[in-house]
Image (cartoon, rainbow over all chains, first blue to last red; front, top):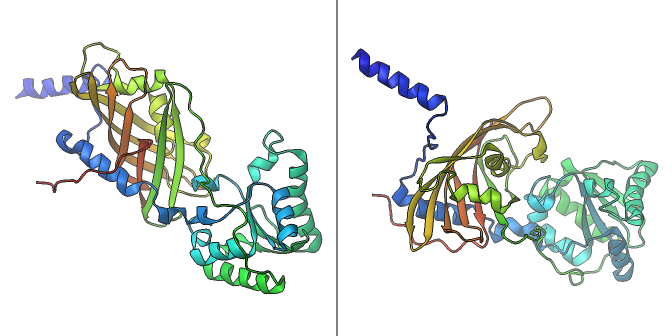
Length: 90
Length: 287
């Protein structure tokens, strides 16, 4: 019994000191992995409903915005922010 | 704003039919390399004029100009974030400026532009979708990860020839991918991320006719401080695969997904994939 416990302890130390590369445990069985991951990518990747923001005809520069405003007699809507709104990071 | 009022059809329709809409990232205007001087002058004039007129002003803000370029009014983002408020505001401005309905002046186009890839480079599209909790904002966030050939080779090739693994991918490469696993918050600078754990391992699942299927498994804990006063940790368990033609200089097809991902008391999902992802195959129910 003692020898078995000692063996487990030695094995743990062996792993902890980096002698064996231990894979991070996957909760998904290998046989199911590809299908599961493909399904998750399909579920989570951006959908048209996430891209409502891209339905707006945003212009690129203030010069263009003010020129178009004058030319078409339209008010100019300016939204300023910090970050990357194109990525949803702002 | 992106996932809120600026995605609402009743708001986007008004912006397209009655206004000239533009969004400006402040960071682009601080950097002379990114923005020409005359454009930066126009940007700075927005704030100067608003202050001079005694209008509410701020860096995250809505400003409304008349067609002659004169600043008309402004609105704090805390108000503009409310779809009803922004919708009513736009209607008021249409009436005030006697704006006439017309076609969209600039054709809508994708806002996230993929940067060009160099030969042999792997480009991963990284997507986060919030699933619940109050620790972050709703909606999705997208990032692009570039891995050079030397970097992606670590995903699919062991340092030890003939070994099916598992082997550890270097923490630096794992963190290039993991650093984008966080939900949308005020903070967007990945440079401040601090990892407490980041491990990504690869293992060959099969090899047939030169095509290798590699299992990717990982876990990470990372401090993503949305504010400077509190620490919130991202915890995630990741699983995925890479499909690779052995010896090829072409990057592998890679797909990864979180099995679980939390930020504070919130939950979110993350996937990363090389473009374009194919349509999902029919999935048999779990036995």
